[in-house]
Length: 363
Image 1: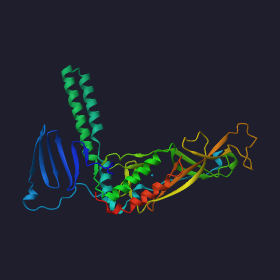
Image 2 (image 1 turned 180 degrees about the vertical axis):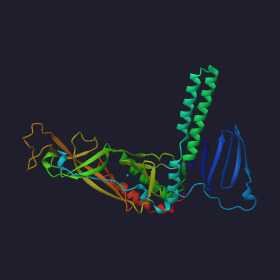
Image 3 (image 1 turned 60 degrees about the vertical axis):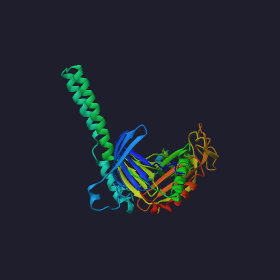
Image 4 (image 1 turned 120 degrees about the horizontal axis):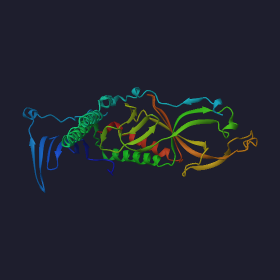
C-alpha cells in the first residue's frame, strides 16, 4: 500500500514535507536549506555526508508555544424529427460542499490572480525588438537576452507560488486502502477502448430511419485518467473524469468540479452514481473491447428486417455498453458511456466504501 501517496511536494523553490509531527516547508539549494516545521524554524547545511542542522527560535517561542497550524486552509461536469434534450450540470458555483467553502475560496482567488509569465515574456520580446532595431552591439543584446531569460524564469516561479494551492493528506491505513481501491477501479474505467460523454439525448419518432432505435444521443469521446487539477499540488494521485466543459476530480474527502476557471465541491454523501446497461447501435466500427449482442439495419421495415427500398442499407452491430449517470442535489448531472460492460458496479462500490471514511480524513 502507499503507492499513491508522497511525503513531499515541490512548488517552485519551496518543498512541503509531511512527517508524523505535521507539515513543514523548506527552501534553498543542495547543501543549504532553510525551513519551518512543527518544531520551529531551522537551517540545514552540509554536503558529502557531513551535515549541520540548527533550530532557530522565533519571536513567538520566547513567550509561548502553541500547537502549529497549517499555512493552508482546511480543504474541507433524418434528425429533423428528433428533439434533443441537453444533459448538463447546473452552475458549478452552486456545488459548494459545506466543509469545502474555505478551500473553494482560496482556489478561486488564486485562479483569478494575474499570471506574470506571459507578461514577462511579452515585455522581454518588446525590449529585445527595440534593442535590435536601435542596432545595439552584440554584447548588449546577449546581456539583455540573458536578463530576459532570468526575468522569465523568475516570473514562472512566482506564478507557481502565487497561483498554487497545496493539499497534504494524511490517511489512516483503512482510508488509504479505500482510496486506492477507488483509484484502481477508476483507472479500469479509463482503460476502456471507448469512453464517451453524453451531452444530449432525444426520442425517435420514426424508428425506421435510425436502425430501429427508440432514442438517439449526442456523444463525444472523453477521458478518465489519473491527473491533478491545474495549479493544485497534492501528495496523492487523483482520478479525473472529463464531462464536457467540466472535470470531476476525486479526492479522498470530496469531489472537486472544475469548470473553466471556476470550481465547486461535492461530498461523497451527496454523490449518486446510477449504473445501467445500454444497447447501442454503432454506425461505425465498434471498439475492440465492445460486446456485440445483435445486429440491425440502417433502415428497417415494420417487422425489424431490412427496408428493401434503400439500396445501400448497411447492417449495423448492436453493442452492450454501460452508462454511469452522475447526479447530486446541488446540480451535478452528467452521463458517461463505456464500451466495456460490467465495470461500473465495482467503481460505485469503491466510491461508497470511501464515503464511509471521508469525514474522518486529516488534511
